Image 1 (cartoon, rainbow, N blue to C red):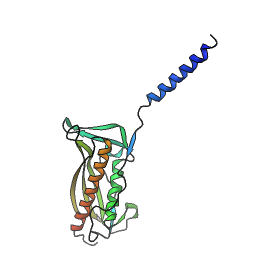
Image 2 (image 1 turned 90 degrees about the horizontal axis):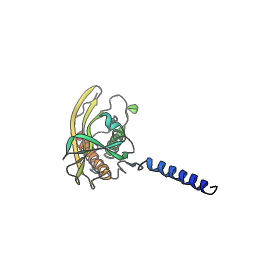
Image 3 (image 1 turned 60 degrees about the horizontal axis):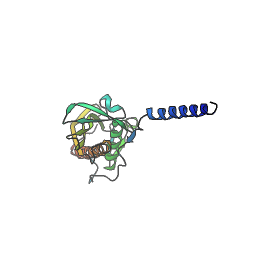
Length: 203
């Protein structure tokens, strides 16, 4: 009896330890847009010398680290979160930083709202959609839709809606992250082109 008791206690402790580990579930995987790399669209001249870019606004579900997708072939009205995949930072922050980086690569001096001086044009971004959409069980794309508004002082210069989709390389969260990064880069290029067409009056 004196020999069997320690064995029983050790066995019980091991079972509890293994049970505790199992109850934690899989470790989440975190994604971001990856390095910005080289500029995708070469500008002959910057559309503006200096621009203030405010952080993007959007629905509350884009202000968390959850990664969302839609099954368009089953229920397009339902947005579903991945169980064990997350963004490193909320999508609104990821998109804001990517747009600032790409516009700066286009030759524009980009300032934040805290650094803004009077009279410098201000770009505001309102995000409508940022999600991975599955057309079938094996085919998906990253979709980004936003509204850009350019102000000078309190005057609205112009406003335009931009929407881009990019095919995912794989039907999972990793493919979705890559596709959303590509769609965001494409919108940044569209923004640069749009800014270059505007006639911005002086204060």
